[in-house]
Image 1 (cartoon, rainbow, N blue to C red):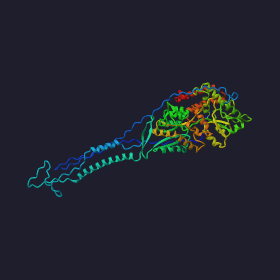
Image 2 (tube, helix red, strand yellow):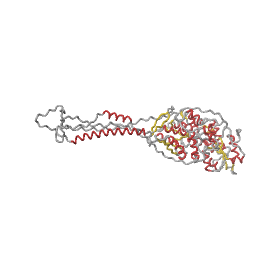
Image 3 (cartoon, rainbow, N blue to C red):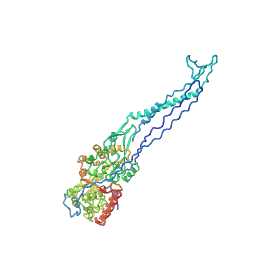
Image 4 (cartoon, rainbow, N blue to C red):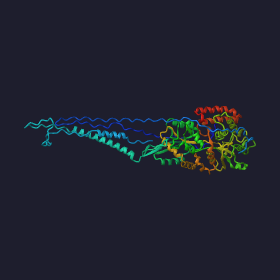
Length: 624
């Protein structure tokens, strides 16, 4: 079988750019003992010259001690109740039975400076020893009258010639003086250097960055010294650097000393590379992840602190599907910069020519598809009514199937239920019974751009492909079809903080910045410069701002009623979504090509889905 995920049409080529990792400076400790001055013996006269005592060399400084690093806290999954549905309207629906259509800088160590000053204060004054006194002699002054004799000295006998003490050689004397002077000067210079270094780190324009902890208390946590800065490594997807740089530069202006290094990652093996990098301690500080990955990234995601947004504020800011999917253990773990859902695209000319109203229910979709399909004399379809019915050339088929199951009241973990069987039968009937779509046609988005199908159901980013493929295509966008209650599908991405990041405070400040309305508007405007429109706003209080854009307004109208599951297409996760999608893909192919009933393929699907959920440790409410 050919996996539909390998056939998806990507909007743009993605680049995998390796990220340089910021180095974190170590905190040197000032150690060692100031050098001691030489000890000079006292001298009395008359005495013999005394050899000077050699000065003691200074002790080597002690090596710095590394501060212990606290391990990050890993959250455990928590249970969450789901709304119950009891619809079963799809069980017998077909074309003949259609219901009614309704980095921290280090200053000088003050403790070392105080110790050096105390040592200097306690040292006795070092006075150079006087040379031995000479009683008289050539070139020396005679003793002054009244000068007392040195203790123990005998007065000279009358008439005796005076005895002269031997003259000391000057070399030893000058050596002693020189050593003392050098030691004292070195000590004074060292003290002055440390004093000047401490003063410069605190009085030359340094600033302190303040952050708020989860209790709402603002504390200073980082001193920013000119010339040094914290770098936030940010892994993104889909958005080119020229778009994100427009958003980032204002944050850097508002937060001097903090730089954001954005890297647009390739979607290939992104989820695996992300988890491997974080596990090894080399992961980004901020990264993009799909909302459905939350249960399998519990160890990598840091809960969003209250300084970014409180839980109460989160619930009233974002659509319910975000509050549901981005929550773990009662805490939110991601800030979405966008929203994505599904909508029905229809060819205006085809509907006008056929005189048909735009459908709003699945019953109306079936009726219109049967009337819009065109077949050749050989019975082959030359123009499809709607691109539904198989898992080979229907883009985003898994999202549509997931939507049908949810609308029909299925519990998606109970794949053996009748609600799941009805949804599978209804979906495949567009090809097996109604014959309004064929596996021989091009992939659905391309077929719609070539006007080879009248309707498709796609996320908003597919519209960019259509505009690039056929700028003259006249099509409309309307709300996704429903059975009875308004229930839609959401599949979107969010930004999270690495639980092992060394720059969590700066990362939290960045997430707070991107959550603001002004930032999202800037993001939308920057993206609109490189494509037809930007990302759909994730905030409920901004939906009206895009109400005049007929291409994306229906997506946001449906957003308050969206739900989702592990059938999200194009996450490229090689994991929970792709693996579960593959089991449904194989089951649908067996129904279409081999004529099997839904009940015949359900056991295999059930076993496969249960195995995948166990593999990723998902159970209870996390399985939803």
